[in-house]
Image (tube, rainbow, N blue to C red; front, side, top):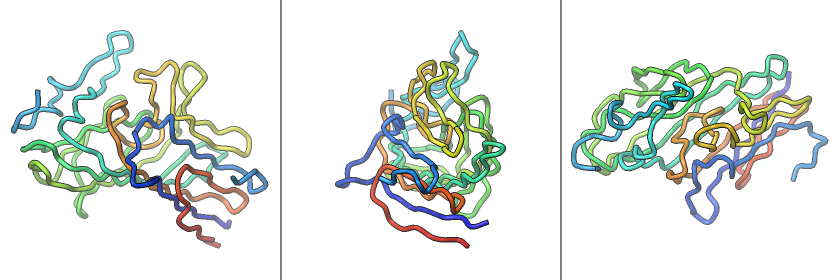
Length: 232
């Protein structure tokens, strides 16, 4: 089986784009398609302070206030989207971020209905828990203000469609595509159905996509095209 790999970056005029993934859309399609209170102490990720429970659904989720502690600077998303039979995706996302406070020892990311295989930082496996849509990762070392690092989350699974029937990640015939919103979701941003992120209306980040498809399909993404590789 021949597979194509396409790389794009979302960094237009050096502007940093929101994790409001409703403004990001990628499509895997047939080739014949038209290719066109912060302080000096770590507060933000303590579960009892910054995690809320939606009483109607029983969902555990992080609050937007975590963006007062950590600044996500870039998402580098690598996905294999070739399994149209089982409608699965697999791959990894490298999340680059900078601490805005001292004594930061964890990061909370949103990831819904996908299985986390491992989390790595500087070649070291990290401890993590994944409850409902909340992925809590213990960093290899404590960060202080202005410290930068990155972690890589390896994951796979069947991305979901929003309960409203409009939004999320779809496999439809020869197409796979992400809408990035969920009308019934809270919040309505819905990046968490296909990559780990701060899924809120606060964070601003750049994006890089590397999407592997079968040779009869191609990936269409927002941003500047970098390169494509024929893996035959």
